[in-house]
Image 1 (tube, helix red, strand yellow):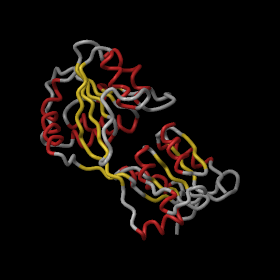
Image 2 (cartoon, rainbow, N blue to C red):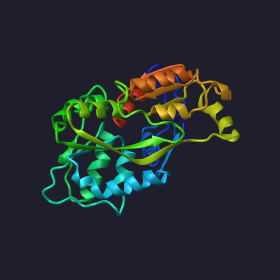
Image 3 (cartoon, rainbow, N blue to C red):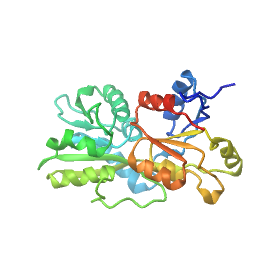
Length: 286
């Protein structure tokens, strides 16, 4: 039987719940277990093809037409996988100058593999520097802003959450991809958007809610990498008390959502596995 880790304070560390979508969740769990943590995959978001016919039609069209763009911005690794892992995907000409934008190292890593399958090298990828304080659109923009001038065309490949209205195209300042799209348009670029996948919150039945009582006890740790994941967690109205649990989050917006749900402790880190491991090693939880 797996045993919890003991932090530097000598206090026990309970179960570590990885909430990323599959297959990332299981991959992270495997690594965490090799480091002695009692990790468990608990994906809070499921991804799938868009359900609306118009969105599917647009996705099919852009898989053929993406080579006409100057840059493609992928908002997540799921966006890369859902857009590029398709027999409909056009192959670029040898002299294509197209660039690929990734907001963080995880997306860039998946993107590098996808580009290799269509004969392109990873040196076409632009992403925030390794030492960036955050891996997000705001820190990507200084790297790619020179590519977004008049006459340039940028395609944003993203997902949408089922049951939630899409944000207006102008977006709100500081809100990820919408903020970046607004900056590109201000610089004179044409920005197009394609929905490559849909996110669906996980549904919790009664037996699962009973299991949560043991997963939210003091010492438990939830790894949260998206605000949508926090929204998919049962709130106090479902009888779940999060005050004894710790949330390890990868962005200030996720931290705000975790505090609002009632997590007793919220720790922020960058969204890389080595840094998450360092945080888990350092935690001393009651």
